[in-house]
Image (cartoon, rainbow, N blue to C red; front, side, top):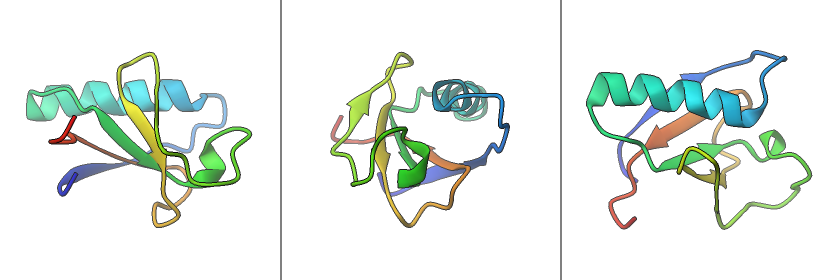
Length: 82
C-alpha cells in the first residue's frame, strides 16, 4: 500500500474492530472502494507485543502492526497485491 487514509479514533469505549469498521465505512463513502489493509500501532493489538504478519478481521480488512503509526491512528487503504 503506497497511498492510504489516516484515521484518528481515541474512543475508549470502542474496540479495535469497531474503530476499523467506522474508518472503513468512511473510506468506502469517500473513495468508492473497500479498503483491505489497515496498519495500527502495535499497542492497539490486544495481547501482541511483536509486529504482526497480518490477520483478517470480520470486516475483511487485514490488520498489520507498524511502530510508525501513532497510537489511536489507523492507516487504511487498498493493498494492490491483495
